[in-house]
Length: 449
Image (cartoon, rainbow, N blue to C red; front, side):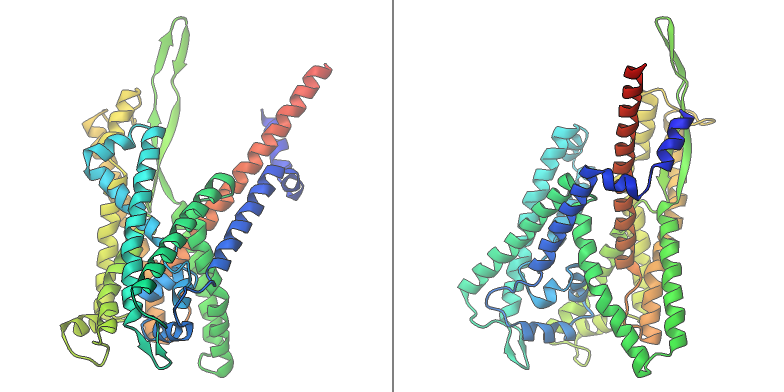
């Protein structure tokens, strides 16, 4: 066994990758699907003046539109057929997941295995269409009321434009949902995550060029740019460390005698991640906080306008102390809330007791559930503080030093997480390919003897 493992480790090289035909086919399929997505982000929505949309996005880019435009790879700013991107599907998935913990019927489906999972996926698709319909109609109505220095955003407003806009945007979202499922099934990595990843990465070269241009013109000193890049690398390393960090709880199974043979007696571990909630808390928190500023901007109550909505929007603007405290508080709240939804200590303890497993030194049942709850609460506290640090650091750099490069927070966490997951899947495919090769060699040697 040891020699086989050593041979497997030594053969994990570029040569092994070149022989993995199935893996190469999956990678090429993934790259081709992402290329189709990027082409779609440049197909304009019929009846919309792109120059007016670019001007309006610059005016309201600090609101929720700017965040969604970042996730869509600029498709929203250019108002293309993929303007909604995959975000309605993400919202529907989160809503169904939260409802499955609160509604007994959906919770039962969740426990039914593959058949229940297919039904939940179908409900998610229906909810995606519903959300996309509401969002696309709202965009169509909003576009008709927008005007810039170049004129109106919609060339020929009316019911025909609204219908065509809704059909085009909903169709684009459904196509991306299908494309993501195809990547997951026939490619490498999670298709939905890779689509968001591709949208964010597509904007990075332009952001980096802007940063270097500021250094060339003297707006930022070379020393500051160098220090900024060092901090960016350090933040990436910190995110990788925290995303991989986990608490391993030892679980033992007693020995059982079936006939004249002994089974069990194994010892394994249950990994609990420090950041169980992932990037959900920052997305929820930033979306909620950016709503007042966005509504105030489109209702005419801008930075110089009056009204209570403008006052709230100005107080919750990027870089303001109220925004910082509210952002951190919401991240902490959603970290605990989402962790409580996705991990049930009592259910986990009952499953362990059902299969005879136990945590050494802890009584099975209620005591084990309380132990899991205590450990998870401590881990969630550390994870919530980690999210606050990563998400607030770029806010401080932007507000204090005018850095135009959003290198931290939600976008960087998505990039790092998706990259690690994709690399892990590639390694798994390589390992499977190597094991198949070793098995074939062992069979050939066995026949030769």
